Image 1: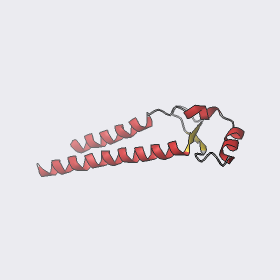
Image 2 (image 1 turned 180 degrees about the horizontal axis):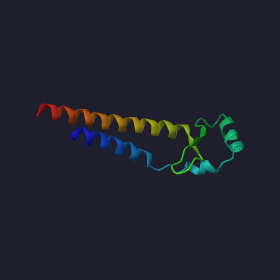
Image 3 (image 1 turned 30 degrees about the vertical axis):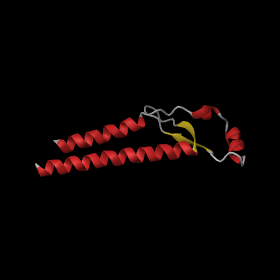
Image 4 (image 1 turned 180 degrees about the vertical axis):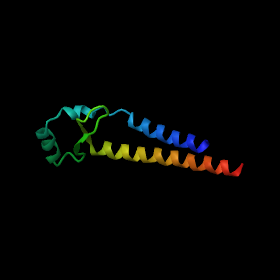
Length: 100
């Protein structure tokens, strides 16, 4: 039963990560492709803008989401740390179960 609870916590943790704010930084989603290309081609701008189409729940039409590379890297690291913490907690709880 505790293993099922741990799996539930893992799923809820991942769902929570998906619910974190994806508010565009500086209105990047409102920029045209030409504006983004001009920004990225400027050698003074080392933090490039990356756009991609992300699937949305409840529709087959993807949503264009633009973020700076630094934000993508920061979120990936944060998500990785959270996942590792959840997995570590799961391992520790499993070891406690086996010891009783």
